Image 1 (cartoon, rainbow, N blue to C red):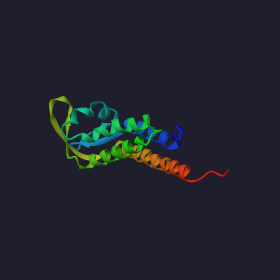
Image 2 (image 1 turned 45 degrees about the vertical axis):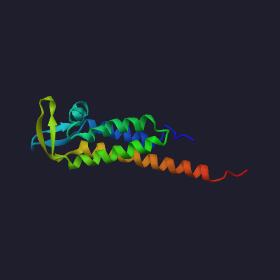
Image 3 (image 1 turned 90 degrees about the horizontal axis):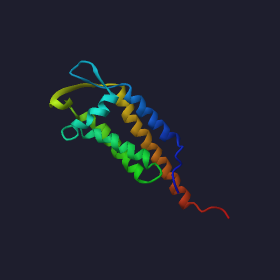
Image 4 (image 1 turned 90 degrees about the vertical axis):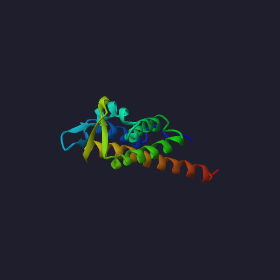
Length: 141
């Protein structure tokens, strides 16, 4: 059995993620915010330092790509955990010059980003439960 690619959770997750890219994700040094699309593009600079949560972007893409497999549930759960773990980060690398900025707040983009992971995770759980019910329940003859 496969998960149908037209689940509303799948599309809602992608829409929320896209909306997150157009919003400020977090505030640095009590100044202007960092747009989600810039964080996505340049966030990989921080992966080896304090920005392991950026890998949630890769995992949610894998979850979308493999939405018809059980692995998508694992990808989305780990992405959700990594996304939430960003709340524990106080300072983050700003660009390629190894300058650090203090995260002083989180904005709409961050919450939409995490919400997209949550929606995909819920969708995967719902679909996995449907699969279990369909395989356990005998069909009438």
